[in-house]
Image (cartoon, rainbow, N blue to C red; front, top):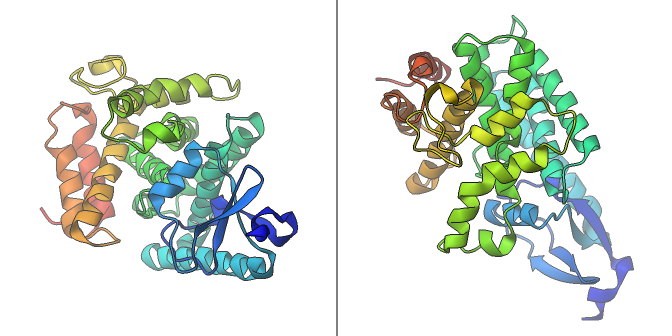
Length: 333
């Protein structure tokens, strides 16, 4: 038991580097009140749910015994390279740079969300990486449908944020928006859209049947934008996306019940991307699969296609669905 108190026995490892669904190669410890407590055994996974719980508690590091830290770091490097290779196989070697950029942004998202409050340094890093990604994604040689495929579905807030951002800029391109400034704002807005959700206190987040959880979900766009407004370098367009990404075209959304053209157009685009990814994330465990198949993509696309102006601006629906069908090429009507 004395080992729990000995600082010299443990080393920290950044939590942002972990795939929460991968089995650990060593016992994982948390540091709580200067004590080191075993949280997961070798062979266990952190799980996406607990990964997001760490975010809500602003946990940036976990700990391992010094004697196994090098093994853990090598395993993390191999896990990241495996994830990159799997995605490169899906989208083509010519898109490796985009895949690598996507993984870097995912790590920055976790680091940014894990801070107790947004800080200007983290935001500047995220904006810089986002601009570079948009610049690459906008190049003429890039097949735009590939951008929508840069997704990894494990339901953690970090991966969900990047998935939503990638699908959102693809939808924006399909709808005729190609200006660098617009795409950068859409991308940043989508990356930050669930910042308020990530900051729901752990005691509320763990009890989803409680009315306080429902209230926190309803309020997370306001909470997120309230925090984001403190940063002087985040454009108003990004703030509007975060504030309005759950508003619905018929006025039945939240938190403000905005309606029709009263909703910022790029918030509507991020909303479609968010719903598309949410449906996929919900369907995968139901079907016992880790990657979407034709049936899952078909269901997600049909939700948007059959919306008829309830949630989404009907002006965007046809081009969005045509684009998504193109991106996920084996989709059949």
